[in-house]
Length: 330
Image (cartoon, rainbow, N blue to C red; front, side):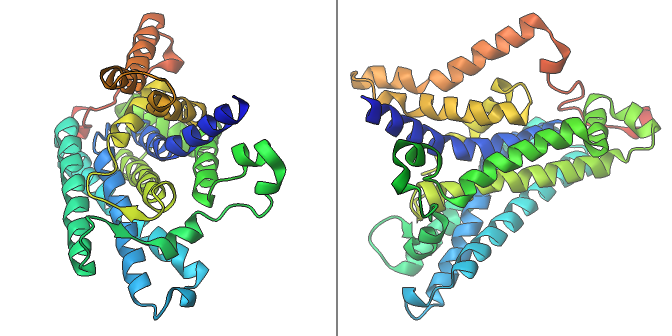
């Protein structure tokens, strides 16, 4: 029984890491007043960009033994960051510069990102010439999945806390740093001011458009790492079209669950990860399994209702969230 609980928690953490990356990036974005519903697409683009970098690096090697650990990690990492940064810039140009509707732009970005991933994923599959509809990047993935050398020798503690790749710990560190930035620094205060009342922030000398651009682009880069983690670590370096599932939408739901606090997203990601896989550990019929798969969304709705009823200011989203800023109206 104890070993089953440890295995469940370990798998819940692994499931939750992509959600933590996505929700942290989205919280940073939403704190600036931008509602980016394109996070699922950004995560797809980040994952696929990293896959392309890893694919061409592996194909440049005469044999897997020639792989350099630093290059095997840094090339996919940089490609993922650049791809998701480009997605963030596209969103910012449309919503901040051109003042397009944020909801429509975000949904369009999700559609574009999914198509981007599937198109290039299919192209890479054709290049390999395999009959299997997937791309395997085992050599590169092994470096991403490398754990601490003493993890296996520390029993259940090592299995639960030390048996993950470096990106898992990176996600937690980024969430903590974002929480510190938002609550303890002048830059975080300016960012929150822009999200609450951009006109007042503008009158105080804060560059609203620049703040929105930086927050959204950095948030997109963080979210893109969630896609990279899923492929290189969780999926063992195997890319298959539409394999990412609805994790991008769960990341957005996690923002509401964590009431826009990155530090709470750490715990929330584990909860969501557990709810996402709990049907595998509960003996039930196939039809009942579908009900268990709804649990993350049901919990999000319950939290949203509770937050709305209590109406505590610190648990609400930014007041200007989703609204374009027209300086002429100031």
